[in-house]
Image (tube, rainbow, N blue to C red; front, side):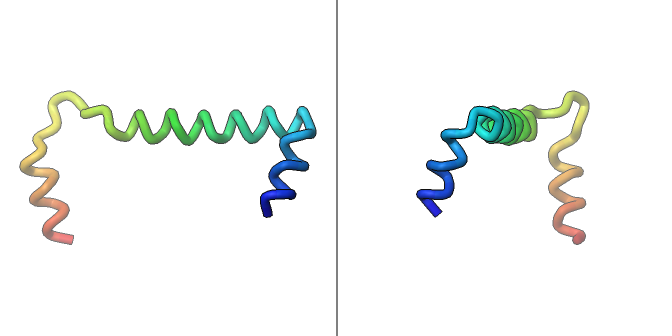
Length: 51
């Protein structure tokens, strides 16, 4: 598996796609931790308990 990643990293087009994918995952993870304004956390927690 490591050799496959090493070989993929040598190809410039694949390297760009891998970097783009990792950056989009990072943006998604950071964006999911930003609180939404006017959202009542107590009500959200209560809704999660109902499920």
